[in-house]
Amino acid sequence: MRYSPRLFALGSVLLLAGAAYAQNFSAPYGVLSGVQNGAGITLARTSYAFDFSRSAADAATFINSFELIPGTSFDPDIALNLPGTTLNAGRSNEYTLGTPLTGDRSIRFDDLAVRDGGFGSNVAPGFYDFQIRVRGGTSATATDQLALFGFSLEIVPTFSLAVAGSPSQSSVPQGGSFLANVSITNPMARGAILNGIYAGVPAFSTPGDGMDAEFFDGSGLYFTPGGSVVTSNETVASAHSRVDARSDQRLGSYISNYGIIAGFYSGDQYSFEAGPKYAVTVTSAVPEPATFAALAFGGLALLRRRRV
Image (cartoon, rainbow, N blue to C red; front, side, top):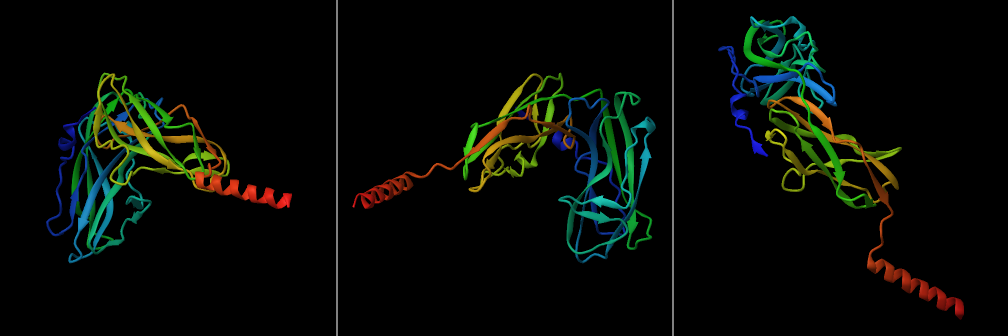
């Protein structure tokens, strides 16, 4: 595994912020890919984002609308979706267009321009450039240009990884823990960037109960993708997360649901579930040795009382 030098270059985009406003707009990445055929991908998503920050000393900022400006080679079948009335502000938060942004703020807005699934064979492989103009100002009706982002989209035939999962142990006692592991093989001729990991809620489930994944080991992530690259025909194996069974966890088999997010560029969102799904069995907690001793003495006392 190696780290991608492209992580720095991809952050540069064309930005023109309105001089009359003190807020700052930037884009975390300027190039993303989109697949013609999403077969084999759990979820294929192309989603551009932008970062916004402002100071409490500034007048309220209103973001009111967006405009996509296609480049000369842009194909209308690309059909990226722009925000309608709300913006995804991360962590299940939403910003409603035309409402004031006040105070000290630093927000990443996702889904500035988004497409779920494959783009189809109507869009030929290659690069397509476009811009997105952000309009707003100091009121809900303002139409000033706040920013102008320049983006590029590379359409590729497909994206493929083999992602397998395995547990550190096949069973876990109530109150115990185990590691959910992941192995990633890149069969493509081109390197794949690991952009993130995910787990279902719950990560392991049985009817009526579940166990969640813990990504942090106390000092960092169990698995830190960090834009690392899996080169052609390379296999990378790592712990993915820790899974804890409660002391009152329902006994039985729990089925896995977790995976990784990768792509050709930093910011690509191709999700691959670690499969095939597998089971981990929750068993009764084994008493500590001191508990066994206490039980033995208790049984002996009971026996003696019966003999008297």
